[in-house]
Length: 165
Image 1 (cartoon, helix red, strand yellow):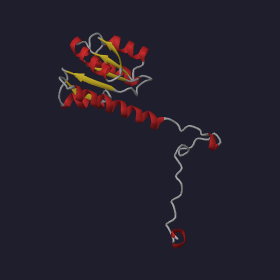
Image 2 (cartoon, rainbow, N blue to C red):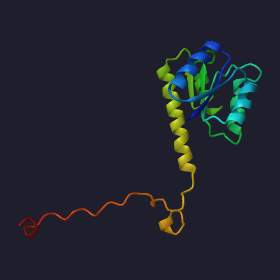
Image 3 (cartoon, one colour):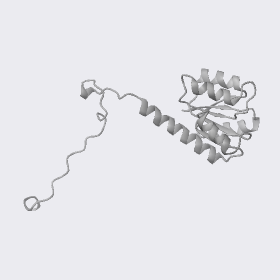
Image 4 (cartoon, helix red, strand yellow):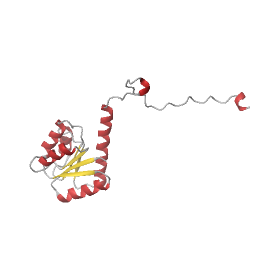
């Protein structure tokens, strides 16, 4: 089961997100400020973070920098904000803070779930691409990229006059 950290001070928005994500089978933890977000991120090790960047105590920009410069920098971040809107902030979120998605609130459940699915899928693909090949018994323990591919039988020969009769 995938774990999602919601970092947001807006109680109504957190409640809506939590219900929606838990309804989809995700485990959810909540942080109401930036310092708490960092602490929960480090102790609970979520697979994804959904954050309002305008967090008290430690701004979401700083939280994003800390996450993306740490040992778990591959964890996707989604900014879901009612404050930082427009192309300027979307571009800044992507390039400067390495955010996977920038969602402007209000947003529908479908928009949020789509962003969550895409971010988790991209993270999985990146992890698979970065993983070394695993050794296989039939290669003498040496890594092999095609060791797990199914072997297809040779194509059947076309019928001839002898095989038809």
